[in-house]
Amino acid sequence: MQTVVSFFDESERIATEIYGVGGLFGSNHATSILELRWRDLLDRYQIEYYKSSELSAGEGQFKKFRDDPGAKERRRFSDREREFFRKVKTDFTDALVQSRGLTAIGAVVLVADYERFIASGEPGASLLSRPHYIATSLCLYEAGRQIAMENERLPEEDKGVVYPIFDSHEVYGWHIQNDFPEFCKKNPNESRYLANPVFESEREWIGLQPADAIVFEFAKYLENKIEHPHVPPRAPLQRMADANMLSHCYLVDYHVLQVLAREQIPSPTVARGDELFSSPEFPEPA
Figure 1: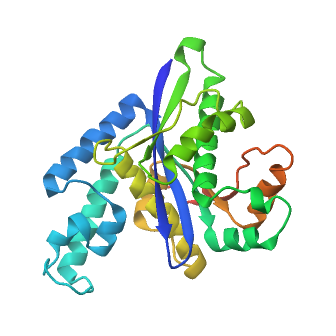
Figure 2: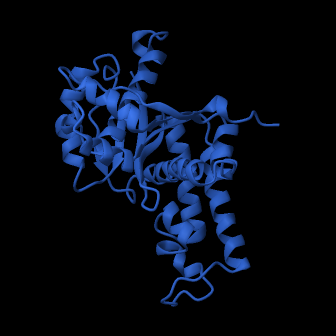
């Protein structure tokens, strides 16, 4: 059996009420190369970890690169800061897209639709899990579906097993682990080659940091589709598409929640949402 490692993190856009879980999976060899390249960049910039939201705001690990790191109030980036942070993002995106053999997947939930549906009283609404569980289950489902399809054409000794690693979460982690046997029961084919999910620290498991970068772009992509529908995909996401990394990210809106709720009666199964995007949506590289 081959080891296939998957890393997943979460991202939340509070203003537009978007919640996503996403990340990547690939062979142990492919993820190890990515981790080595990522560590080199952490050493180069002398930061302990990379987090996209902190880079975007110039906070956390990136506050020391501001023109005035001690400033109390929020300030717009200067031209120098903007150029520097763009280079940092480009360098880490390079490490991600140049590490071959990786696949990016995810699921995003429109939280306002979720809350509206829960309050609607529609059949099954009271049985739905929280957005984190829905999005996490869809990621597990998609990773399991893809490895099951890949294994169909391989001899038994070459089949892969996906080991899902999530960023640690005090509230939801144990729920996901406790409910995983039920997930497997409801999704026997998609869970056939899935190991039990574990929750680890992003500082110890470096692969969780590129997972954070991926799901940040997924959530930002949906936010832009809502607020600025004519704006093209941001450079990091487009570069992932050009590198043939992007597989699927699923959108869980009101309609999909209705489908999920109906499937809770009488025997729930995890159903994929509508596609937020799939790789064919993006233009081929020139």
